[in-house]
Image 1 (cartoon, rainbow, N blue to C red):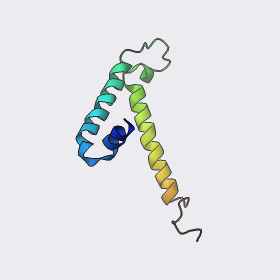
Image 2 (image 1 turned 180 degrees about the horizontal axis):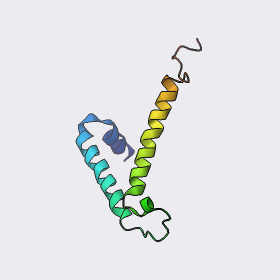
Image 3 (image 1 turned 135 degrees about the vertical axis):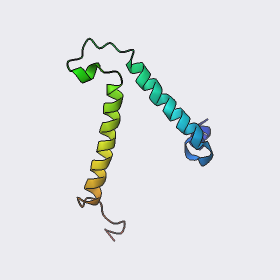
Length: 84
């Protein structure tokens, strides 16, 4: 069972199936956001359907870019043989 899962996510012959699966999950998450009650929203953007998915994706992308910048330009990342 676990071998099939590892093969699915690791083998290049399943690239198209993985992309379809990920797009399907993304569409389901945004579609599920339409079913959530908006009575508790305090701000206008919290009432927009799909806002939480967009905000989560944008935050993740921002986190990746900031960490890459800090690693490469901020001097946090070192060569592999730094301690040798």
